Image (cartoon, rainbow, N blue to C red):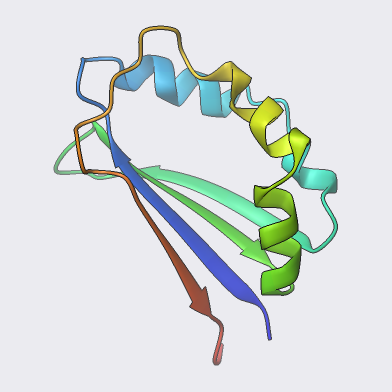
Length: 100
């Protein structure tokens, strides 16, 4: 069964455009990770500072392996300098795909 990982966070210091630019210009390191299927990034229409990162994986082991890898940490090197997140806004939810 495939999984969906939803990462949610809210930018606290008016840097939403820099975060958007960083995602649009991301280095695509995850794209070649074993088990990775696709990634989407969204922000709320009600709050442009609220981001939702969705990644699809073939299985939980592939996601967990990526999440603990050096490449995962390297992929975050593009985070805009000075970025602050709203305290306690970061949430990661792992979901099992059931049906299309």
